[in-house]
Length: 368
Ligand SMILES: Nc1ncnc2c1ncn2[C@@H]1O[C@H](COP(=O)(O)OP(=O)(O)O)[C@@H](O)[C@H]1O
Ligand SMILES: [Mg+2]
Image 1: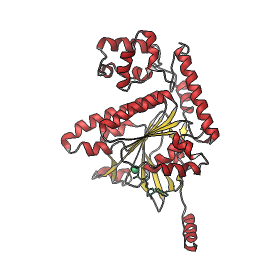
Image 2 (image 1 turned 45 degrees about the horizontal axis):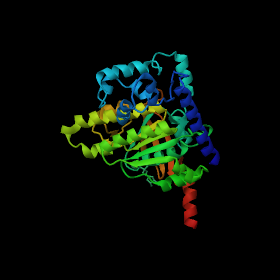
Image 3 (image 1 turned 120 degrees about the horizontal axis):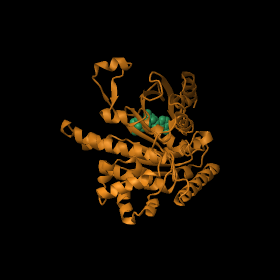
Image 4 (image 1 turned 135 degrees about the vertical axis):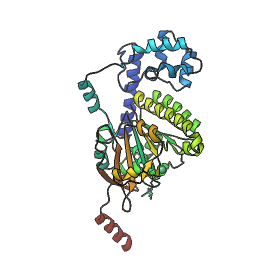
């Protein structure tokens, strides 16, 4: 692990160097995954006070300002309409937001780092692992393995790239109180990592209400400017919405707020290149069309807003014993009729346990 920790430090140094270079005015074109601190705007006549207003509203980098619409920026307290126009003008030359050739896009996609999930079959289902810079929704019923998958990713995200990681820190927003450091320790040991170091690289916050959950994203964004993060987990994204907004009468409000939250997640994925993984629950559906989806009688909550927010929707369900079955629900590039099996063990997500292994395990237990 010392090597991985060292690489993490080296990575942070590289980022610092990158930022220093940008601050000196070289390499003006930010490019994907490179972040530019807001302070860069001082050179364009923006005061520290104005920048503080932006930061408090969750716009921590020049990219965040560039990707926001004028209408969104006008909602920031202390930023006038005139200022917004000035801001937009200033960031225009700093962040590339125009067309690129498909060849360039192809190259960029090939360079996307994907996080190992713990099971090769599940990685393959996801096209090589959990994509960084993208949003992945993991949904399924209670005990289907959503939180265990998050625990495993929180460890693998820290591995060197060659081993399926992204050499970065992890931010974990927990709305259900189910994060368990002792699980991280076990999983880290399974990967031969120094568990203490792995825990140190995970920054955790419990979210107590919807407003607080949103505030935590702002705090996470501020941390991501300081050091390199590889993964942001929100487990679960919807639990607090379900308890705070009840009944049909509050549905429109709930969806509006959830939409804002999910947009903030997307902004962080774009800005910092982190993999954003969030979990969601399911409800029973009485949809007669369900039969055409392979007879599934469960659907994720959150409606259309949730459905369109992520690049990948992963559906987990229980299999035999410790095994679980994953399926892609919606993906721009992956077929949605293939299953991947995996298991949940003491070492987190691992490859499927075959019947033969189960029998051997049972025999071992009986013998003892
Ligand atoms: N240390 C462990 N070894 C084996 N299985 C475990 C361990 N810890 C949790 N599990 C299993 O993980 C499942 C719970 O998964 P979890 O990810 O918490 O579900 P969800 O978040 O989808 O509700 C349970 O079936 C539990 O038995
Ligand atoms: Mg859970």
